[in-house]
Length: 57
Image (cartoon, rainbow, N blue to C red; front, side, top):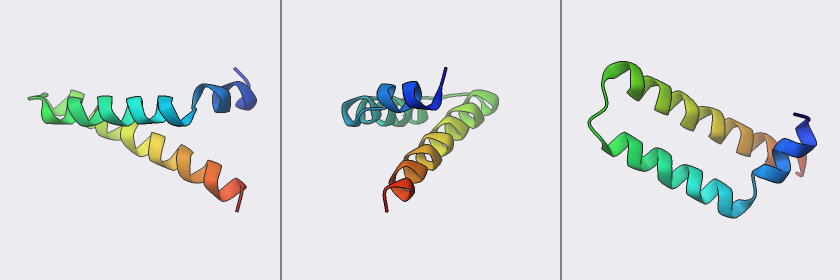
């Protein structure tokens, strides 16, 4: 998948649903390994979003 296709998939509404889903997962009673994976996904999403905004600033 090219970088352009990735940006199309990450629209503002999609990002909102991803963040809400990650927040909901973190509220659940996850074991250590699953919790670490959710936190990593959240951090990667934040990093990706920041890079998009940095590209336009």
